[in-house]
Image (cartoon, rainbow, N blue to C red):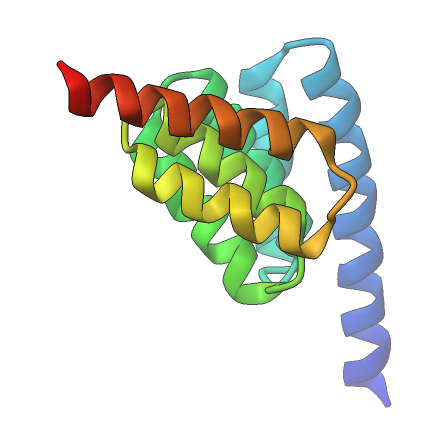
Length: 135
C-alpha cells in the first residue's frame, strides 16, 4: 500500500512539474522549461507527454537528435499519440528527411483524421520531396 501511495505522490509531483513546464514553454523560456521537464521525467519516467514536450523544446533549440529521441520515447510510451508523430515529422521535415516526415504525418492523420496541420504539412513534405527528386 505504501508503494502505491508513493507512486501516486510521484505522479502528482510529475503532473505539477509538467503543468509548470507548459506555462514556461509558452513564454518561450526554454531553459527553465527543460529543467522542469527533466524533473517531471525523473518523477515519472513513463509520462509520454513530458517527453513529447521536451522534444518540442529540443526542436525549437535545433537540437534535432535529442528531439527525435524524445519523440521516439513518447511514441514508445503512448503509441496512439498523434501529437508525437506530428512533432517528430516536423523535425524530420526540418532536417530534409521527407520520406520519414511523410510517414509520420500519415500516422498522425491516421490517429487524428481531422488534423488540418498534419494534412497540410504532409502535402508540403510531398512537394518538397518532389522538388528534391527533380533537382
